[in-house]
Length: 113
Image 1 (cartoon, helix red, strand yellow):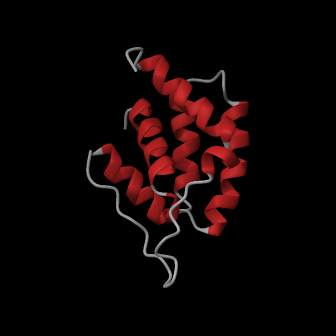
Image 2 (cartoon, rainbow, N blue to C red):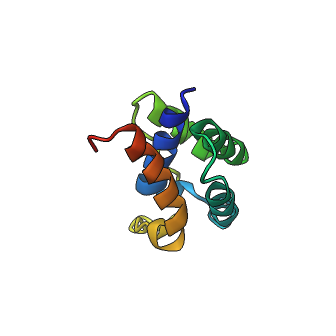
């Protein structure tokens, strides 16, 4: 898979589908953020590999990223009853460096954005 497409698709899932991220996955985002920031000067392929490795532990997220790469509708997570209105995405506030690093890579490959 093209690394820029992987990065962009992961960003879409992270920004639009917070309900896909279990507590374990959300906790794991801190480790992912640390790895991505540490690899800031590496290639997009390296970042894509880091994202792919991380996603491999979370089937729902992997499926959503794959759907996003194909331009399909990203599947929503099944929510526990009573959580129908919980959709606020706290990830930009919780993991600003992760989003910043990934967005910078996408923008540098698409200067018109």
